[in-house]
Image 1 (cartoon, rainbow, N blue to C red):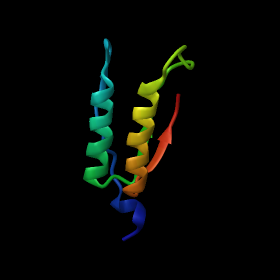
Image 2 (image 1 turned 120 degrees about the vertical axis):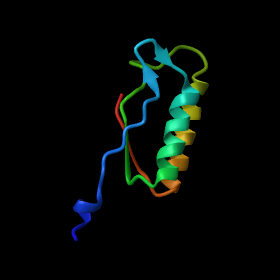
Image 3 (image 1 turned 180 degrees about the vertical axis):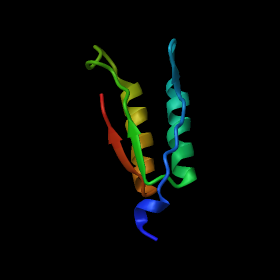
Length: 78
């Protein structure tokens, strides 16, 4: 059996039409790592760096680092 035959697509819903919360995005990343996904594609982010403190970006970056350390290839698009 080839490696490609063992792959599947898993979708984690973290944001909605009204927006969402960073906690929900972090929970989706955690769940994906726990489920043993190989690649996590994240297509969210601000259109620019907001003025002032951008600590919410650091929280997400830390979460993605944890997923990477768990063996997940993280692809992030903004």
